[in-house]
Each structure stands twice: as structure tokens, then as C-alpha cells.
Length: 79
Image 1 (cartoon, helix red, strand yellow):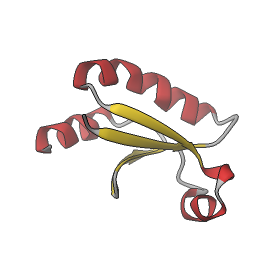
Image 2 (image 1 turned 120 degrees about the horizontal axis):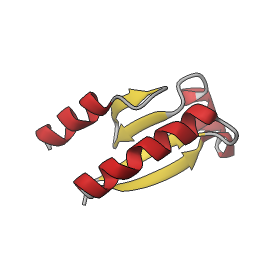
Image 3 (image 1 turned 90 degrees about the vertical axis):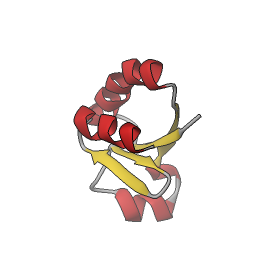
Image 4 (image 1 turned 90 degrees about the horizontal axis):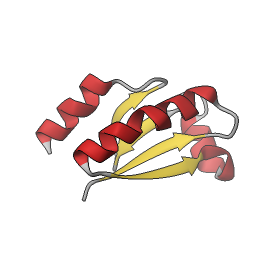
């Protein structure tokens, strides 16, 4: 099973929107989704402060700000 990470922060409507948009795709592709609050880690806050929500597969960025379903589907074709 492929593991994706969604970097977020509390009270972020874009983060909530991306998480919701990922749900049907999670069912379709069967990936696990790890939600990480960047404000709980100083290093992550420095790295991603202005780029959330950010969807990653390991070190590979898939998309940020809004879910780019085309990019995510392309990613799954390559894996």
C-alpha cells in the first residue's frame, strides 16, 4: 500500500478541502493518508509554512494549495 502525507495546519480551509477531495481517490487507489500538522514541528513549519496544504509521496511533491487530481492520477500511473 502506498503512503501519502498531507501537510496541514489547524483551521486551514484549503487543508480541509484537500483532505475531503482525497477521500474518493483514497477509495479508488487504496493509498494510506498520513495527516501532519506542520505547526507541531518547528522544522516542518519552516519548510512548508506558505505551501500548505501540501501532498507528498515520500520526498516527491504531488501538489499544493488545492488538489490537482490530474497530477495525482499521473503519479499513480508511474507507480
